[in-house]
Image 1 (cartoon, rainbow, N blue to C red):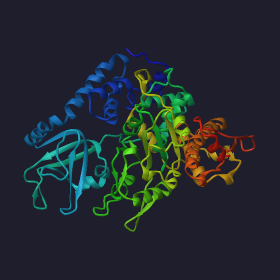
Image 2: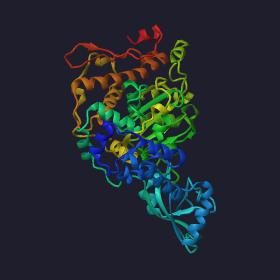
Image 3: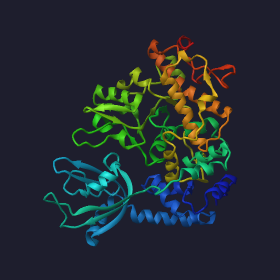
Image 4: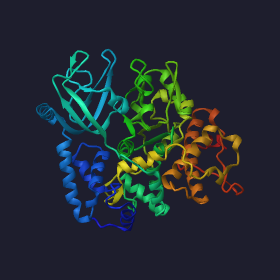
Length: 510
């Protein structure tokens, strides 16, 4: 039996056992091992059972949610059985990931359920999607949406002269129906910054008290969340396998989507001119391109548009401006001994596809997370304690995207000593990173100068890594100077990156 610690008790007292906002992460993990459902679905159901979350009730909760998933979340081998049941009863409910497409010729939307295999997008047995669902829940058109779904069956259902007996009756996205930003601000005041950091670490699924997880490791985990609280934040993470990259960018929010190595087109990324369907950047808070080495860009025009979007959050497509607040994340693998790589005269951008090795594009990356420093996930790093449920956690992150009036103006805490030796992109990258940390760890707006400086130094390191590698590619990017004073009238300070850089290259930056 898991023994609750002081942070568990404090979290339970703050949010209440019946709130649905917190879940036992070990129960969530156990369910994940026997279910195909994503964490958001599992923890949504767990949150509904949170009133029973006493230590002695853990097994009961586990069994109840497991039964719900078994009954309502059928696998591909059970799809035909579910279809038969729906045909017999005229309707049926299911938990699944629904996606849809628009048939231009017929002027209708058709869909499929990814988990059960029911329906198809363009075959002979699609699910008919009434247009009001496609209009209200646009994410079903790009990436799909996990939801509680009710299907109907009626052989008399005719659309444009064709029979569509299987159709969508109702759709309820699996997410909180309401979130109060003032509540999280109030709750945060009950914890110290270190306690709140540990709560976020547990909410991700790791155990902050593990001897293997030091503060730097914690900050790596938290940094992965910045694209979800900052609009148009561009992050690159290259590292070893099994460090949780895909998990972080696939399982922690229903508002982000993960794209594995594939062909990237203007239509998919920005807008389909034939159908008018919005692209990924218009539909999601963040898009992660996993296994970036395998990305294929259809044309040079995609890269050109990507540069425009990464710079300003807008592009021109088909004569019309397309804007979005979507953050872009690129992840992939790189050898752990990056010093050897650098000493061979190569750069830390080596794993990227050739078309992405455009200095002008790479200069738009705000944050290079050194994934080679992030340790592999082992069982002793995983938590058995309480954390914020995925649906509540994701709503917290989303609530702080964009401008937050009560957040402190962190630029007042420091100033650059060589502002003429910085580009506006450097300042923007650092500013947005610090802003991200303040939103994550200080949503109540209370922060001191020393804390701001810690975040500033972290932001400078991650942006310096980008600039150093650009300098190795082209002398034009050398000579930038990130020295600062904090407080503004204090002594000059600088930040270095841990990985060794050739002296000849390092010298170009100073």
